[in-house]
Amino acid sequence: MNIPFSPPFIDQAVIDQVVDTLKSNWITTGPKVKALEQEIVKLTGTQAAVCVNSWTSGAILTLKWFGIKEGDEVILPAYTYSATALSVLHCGATPVMVDIKDDFTIDPEEVRKAITTRTKAILAVDIAGWPCDYNALAEIVNDPLIKEEFVPASNTQRMLGRILLIADAAHSIGAKYDERAAALKSDIAIFSFHAVKNITTAEGGCICLNLPEPFNTAAEYSFLKVFSLNGQNKDAFAKSMGTGWRYDILFQGYKMNMPDLCAAVGLAQLLQYGDKLLPSRKAIALKYLNAFINCPWAILPTLQDERRESSYHLFPLRIKGITEAKRDHIIDYLAKAGINVNVHFIPMPMFTLFKSLGYDIKNYPNAYKQYAAEISLPIYPQLTDAEIDFIVESMIEAVQLEVEMEKSVQMAAQIPA
Image (tube, rainbow, N blue to C red):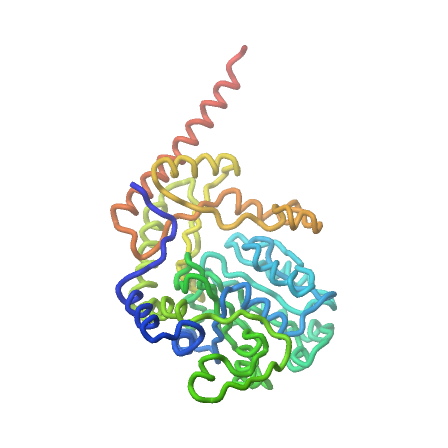
């Protein structure tokens, strides 16, 4: 077999939406983007959705909107994709990395200890689609003593009056928390629509607003739309609809808008998400769970508890007592069998860039522990039962071979020369 890790879901509905866009002769930001934003609001229940060209763009816009700059600090987990920290660096601020819990999510107690008078935001990451403990994080940012230490340096920060809670929801569109969309648990949730995500626009992202009073959602939405288009107060579609050619540049913005051609892919998928795509991902995850539940070496991901439910973006299987090198042997075995797996994630302090900035993986022992034992298995709607069975059988064989090899090495070490 040849089983890819995460191919995009492209069916006739997706093709039809893209063709419709091409035939309309309007391929940059226009009606498809607006329709996608409206469907995201419908799915999440958030106040507004601003589609952009990547998760990273969405994070930079959000941090800049909040006035984050050089000298400020943003707390985030050491265990995430590098874009989480890079977005902070692009604003001139300092990423303050903290360790994670055993479920891969940021540890609220470590967050509390990391807060200083320079802390302006927390970027919590929903790994594999599993929501962070947002209730605990909300308690922290709303703690009267912590609010007293908050030093606002922009009008937006003064309006909020506390640390901004941002959900890096790149993995978690469709995740639930207290029977509602998990995106409602943060001030702002940012989705990724990269090619491997549950919903894709090839490349893309979305900023979902859930701001408290006295924020005016319509005003913030309009600002972010202009901010993502070079600070220009009238986009090309508006001009084409007879509003006139003249426009103004209101402030120094960015070119981060999503085009309709990309939005068409995501729109077609999102219209099928609740009834088809998300349930199929859940079904595959449960098959894996049932297949590995009696394996003594398996550490299974939490998919649902009394308050939260995953979006089933990844199935992060861990192996008890394994080393990083032995984990890699198992991945090599699976690759030779035609199964493409992945690892989520290499902790950021292990990368050259972050080492050069003074981060050390030794300060994040649980992040390394989870990384060294983790293998992400394929999970997407196109997987067949036969492919799932083959993945499970191959995984069990690979672990058993590694165990037997370790026993052989130990026995050889005990034989006198």
